[in-house]
Image 1 (cartoon, each protein chain N blue to C red):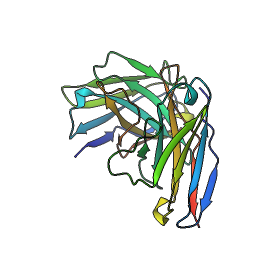
Image 2: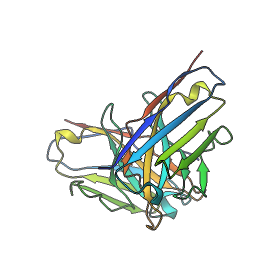
Image 3: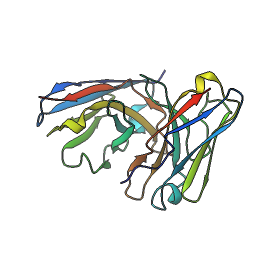
Image 4: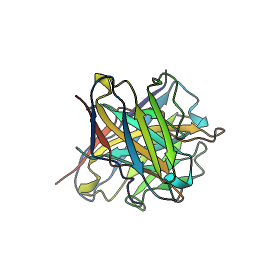
Length: 122
Length: 110
């Protein structure tokens, strides 16, 4: 069974930092593209970042570029995002979401974790 | 990257069909066959319902179908059921190698 379990969220002051993690199981993690997607309270979904299966290709939304850093450890079946210089508008539930395998020309995020809440407030 | 445009709400009675539109531009929806649709019940994670414009993941009911014409994609739900009541989001790959979501549509089953 595919499982994605996020952790690392919490309350942080403006300007602070956190490292969010996503532990993957039930599939060959190293073969799949991965993403972070966030959802502010009562708002819609916002794509945040993408990382290729090998980690060699990375993309960010303009809203987080320069402040967030996505990474993965295929040996540990884990996805990460380092979130720095946090602002009130970064308050959201952060989901990790599985993309397609590297050998499949497709799109769509087929599995999602339960999310981890990041609250930025003084 | 601006969000894709979806109606804020749609409604229908059990057994009826509804369609949710998702409008972008030639740099996203119109430029790629990489449109996806997600269902989200309150307090839950999103669930993939349609990918690559028209494809259904295993386990998703064939009452859900997707299409695209120009810069507008659509999700159609036929034979509405009470459990279909949820928020629906479209998403598209973009020419900037990013993804963009729509603002979401709240479906009410009357």
